[in-house]
Image 1: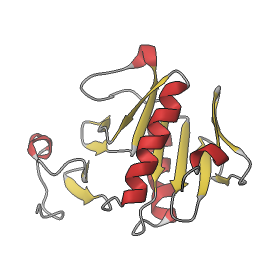
Image 2: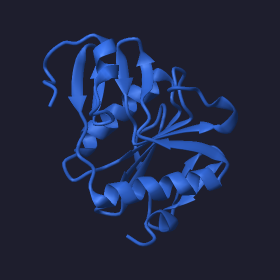
Image 3: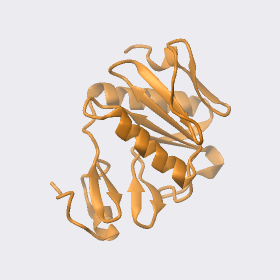
Length: 167
């Protein structure tokens, strides 16, 4: 395992084989929570629903906020004509974070604030354990969705009922 308190050059971060379980913040590694079965199923389901809506959704894709900050959203969503390889260096359309049992909502909201500061207009937070979800648009506060509501990001809208079908 990599020591998360040791400063390291970004080149070493990209050589780590444990990604996507680490993010890189100004030379320090931050370990992501280990995903559960429900986390993985939710990631798969959301990716499929979003792709059916005409967007490109990529799970566990590194995004570059700056030359010294790299985060790994559970799902990064872009418009099909705006795909960047090997990873986005410009703000994506939507970042989705799926809570694992060890995640704290306040930490996840703070991560969404980093995405917003980078220029991402929309963030969604999904909790597959408690079957709750929030949308967090830049400039607003996180908004918990009702069980019969919709998560939205401009023309992209997913029914909360569909999101938790089978859970």
